[in-house]
Each structure stands twice: as C-alpha cells, then as structure tokens.
Length: 150
Image 1 (cartoon, rainbow, N blue to C red):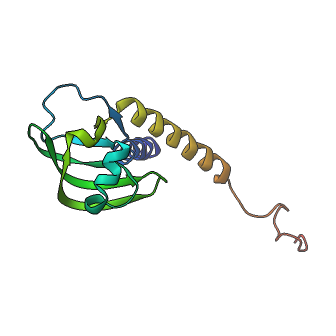
Image 2: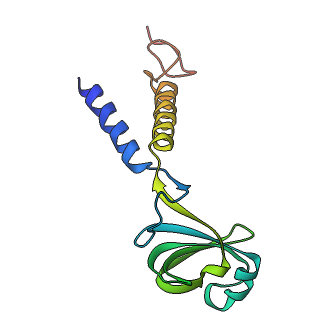
Image 3: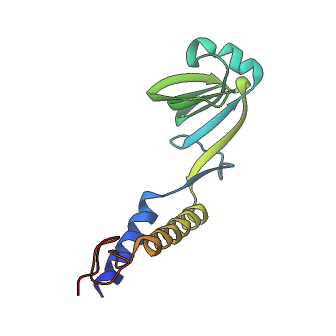
C-alpha cells in the first residue's frame, strides 16, 4: 500500500508542477485584468522600439486599461522575431491599438496538462523499471571476477 500512496503522490505532484498553458482567442470583449499576448504589426514593432526594444514581435502581460485607442499593459515578457524572450517586471507600457495585429489570451489547458502528466508518469515508470532490480554480482556467492568461495 505504501508504494501505491507514493505513486499517487508523485502523479498529483506532476500534474500540479506541469501545468500547461495555451494562447486562445479571448472569450469576451472585456480584456482588462487578463493575461494577454499582443502580436505587433511590423510598423508597431518599429515604432515601439524605444519602449520595448528592437525587433519585438510579441508583448505579454496583464492588461491594466484599454482606452479608446491605447492598451496599457503591465509587461511580463517580450519575444523578438528571432525567438529570444526577455523577462520584464510588470513595467507599464502603452501600446496603441493601431500597432497590434492580434490579441490572444493565456489560459490553463487541461488537455495539455493531462497529456504532459501522463507522458511524465510513463517515463518515470519506464525509468524505474530500468533501474529497479536486485543489483549485485553475476556470480553466485562471490564478487564479480573473483574466486567462488566454497
């Protein structure tokens, strides 16, 4: 029973530690207070260079306000066109609507989390099977390569 409890504990830990998120189309028009990713237009990337850095393709963060023409975002990270990401500490950046190509919401994905936790569990079971065993010498009663005591 102890192994069963340990296995269940490891599985639950994996599920919580491997939570996966995805980017989805926002479900409502009210975006304030949500974790969003703003994909910038080419001109937006150029015009926002002084605020967010060169060649930025996407800006992620918490939307603080959305006025008639400007998003005010507490930035958590930026992603450049070459794939490099830079972490931020919630600095506020104003992004005009005109510079945004698309908006996606970052949300918890139960399907991805379940798939990842299942794969991790299978990998751990396989690893345990490979390394579990009695170990020791191949020759009965002796040390490997040594004389057999009688």
